[in-house]
Length: 278
Ligand code: KIV
Image (spheres, rainbow, N blue to C red):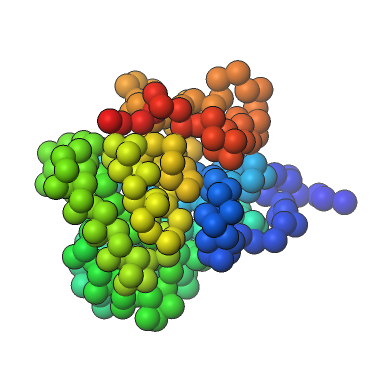
């Protein structure tokens, strides 16, 4: 008999998702459903709903800490949130962001990744960048750190970019992004995450690289989708990016809303053309 006052945190009995499972899903054409989480209760909710990959994103700087960008998030913040998210998971694969400027050199990236994996329970680290990160990705891969390369809109660059803007709209930038994605995968990246790029570019990169491509505002042809969990639950008031959909509308509980998100990714009804960029 379960006597815990928090039975929702009970572990589920499903086999944990591995990096090999994600590669097999791409090969089989099964969509990969991903969401952010920042603590054990949301992690457990997402596990129950069948989310395949949980990301402890440095978006926590904005949606948990209330800041206007992710640049103030520290590696200690990421370790803490990764650890308390891992505590709620039994099935989903756990990816955690390396925070701003913690991967400026390959050795710094290795040391910070060690903390996320050893202390934070992460299965994979995510870094934002293009071909300049090839030596870093190669270094991490050599030492057994699984890596997700976050391309397109890179929120840690917001002050350099002058805002959160769609990337890869002109031909030269799009071609560069395709070449960078190929170089990062060749260096050992296990997943590519594309944020805010035209849908046709999301499709091209997904076809060109051998590893799973997860999109957010990158159209419906990527191998998987990710959103910030508070966005699918309608917790973020005000103007929303066009790729956001509130799955709590019409659902009777958080569990149903989260399961509906997973089902919509799997059956390809989310994202629709209206959620993408041209
Ligand atoms: O930090 C984050 O939550 C992210 C997602 C928006 C992809 O990088």
